[in-house]
Amino acid sequence: MTNERLRVFTGTVILPDRLIPNGAVLVRHGIIQAVGPRDEVILPPGTEEFSAGDGYIGPGYVDIHVHGGGGSDFMDGTPYAVTTATRTHARHGTTSIFPTTTTGSRAQISAMMQACLDAKADWRHGDGAWIEGVHFYGPYFAEEKVGCHLKSGRRDPDPEEYRAHFDVGLIKIATCAAELPGATEFYREAVARGCFVTCGHSDASWAEMERAYRAGMRHVDHFWCAMSSVPSIRARFGTPSQGSMEQFVLMRPDMSTEVIADGCHLAPELLEFAYVMKGPKHLCLVTDANRAVDMQPGRYRFGPEADGEWFTSDGRVGSVEGGALASSVVGLDSMVQNMVRMTSAGIAHSVRMASLTPAERTGIEETVGSLAVGKLANILMLDRNLNVQRVFLRSVEFSN
Image 1 (tube, rainbow, N blue to C red):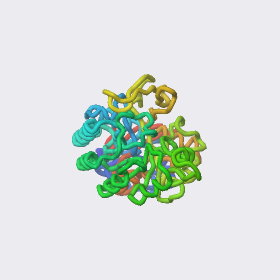
Image 2: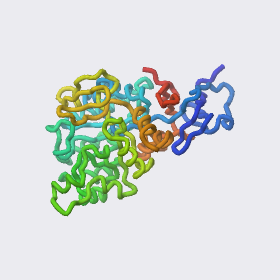
Image 3: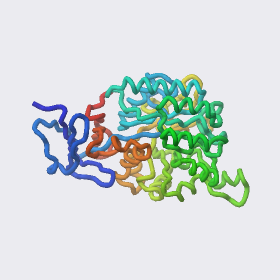
Image 4: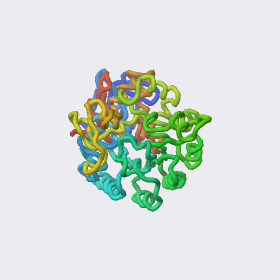
């Protein structure tokens, strides 16, 4: 009789730095017990096999920057919206997720975090991606870099506000534009709370980035999108030209960043440049996805359904009136496929950038992010083209 608590997943196993053809991943009680070539992994009697055939066995993806999917935005502020989005992204291989705030009122952000708390407390395998924590992203953006977010919801850091949000205990990633008054204090508070601290939607100069770095900032959101450049800094400060966020990130070996590899935000040469310059250990793949993931092309709200900014999805990417891009409408599976197809990263590194690297940056690598002994059996079965065929959360198959 098959022991359903003992499972082996076979196929080409994707590790962070290499592939194991004809490999195997042995799982007991939702925990990985062994990883290696199929003929070297000893299978106890009654082990149930799940074969990917000529496809791949990979780790579940980790999305550290994602706003919604399946018609819902996390900022809708209901458990239904949260689980709709987590289920949507699980279908695309994401097993660990950080719901991400937009600009909005204090009450809207509080409602979003409460909905995430409620959804996490009631989580079942059928709810899809596990909420590792919230990414406190909006509202502390530079006014000229708000992008598709609701501009009226943008503001400077307010200690009373952000301390109350931190007190909920769910924020694990914290973003603020480095040039804003009070940014340094925000970064220090976030570091003290154990957060991964980032700079985004910012027109920060090198000097402002240096100040943020000293306060604990170690990451820049979606490279080349809503961020400063040498020309934008020259417009702020005049000549001589000064360094921007781009130069600061590329110069600092311990700084990481992320790319939206949907084929619409960045051309292949920029994806390749980011990969070569930062390497797979300091470059994350993110979706930055909105509610239009898996939805028909049409008009949607970015952020809260009640008053978020309108954008249009053409099925490939979101855009606002005038043509500026407004977040992605695809999952991490597409990002991985595009990195493999458009750059020299290869399969192992492309998958790493969507799994272990974001897990390491956010401090959850002991339990998720790669196929390694002792970690949760968050496992993807992929075909030869890296399309997601089956998703397992803690070795239980996700079905939705």
